Image (tube, rainbow, N blue to C red):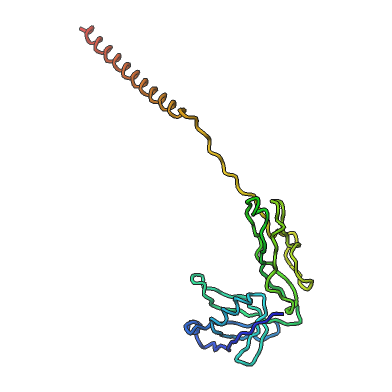
Length: 234
C-alpha cells in the first residue's frame, strides 16, 4: 500500500478564509463516519505536490500539528474556475479494515494497429473507473493496452481490464472503454463540364435581349395606332 505524508495544522475558524489564502494557505475539512469533523489548513505548495502524486485514490497520512496522524483520501478538491488555483480541500477518513469506493484513472499504453495501419481515430470513452477494495489494496491507475485494436469492430470493454483479485470494478462490465473509428470519407464535389456554364449564360443574355426587343416593338405598334386614329377623327 502506498501512503504519502502531509503536514497540516488545526485551523482557527475565527480567521477569515481570505486571510488564509493571502498567506498561501489552503483551508480544509476532515470528516467521516464515526470521527469528529476537524477544520485544517496547510501550505499551498506542499499540498499541490502531494496531490499531484496521490490524486484522489492514494491514502494520505495527515500529520496534524506534528502529532496526530489521520489516514485520509482527498475526497474533493475545489478549484478556482478562472485561475485553476486550489481553493479548498475535503479529506475523508479511511478505516483501514473497511472496504472503500473510489475512482481510479486509466492509463492507455501501446499503439492500436487500426490507427497506425488503417488511419483510424482512437476513441477513449472512459478515462477512469470506480473500484471497491480495502485501503491497503488501492492502486494508482489501471494500465490498458490498446494494441489489440486491430480492426474497426474491435472493442476494449470494462470486463477486459486487468486488475488484482482484491479489487472489484463497479462499472457495467459491458461498457466500452476504447475503440477505433474509421476515417471519414470526404464528399466529392460535382464536376461541371467545360463550356456548360458559358452556354447557359449566353442563352440567358440572348433571351433577355429578345424579350426586350419584343417589348419595344409592341410599344411602337401601339403608338402608331394611336397616331393613326387621330388623323381619321375630324
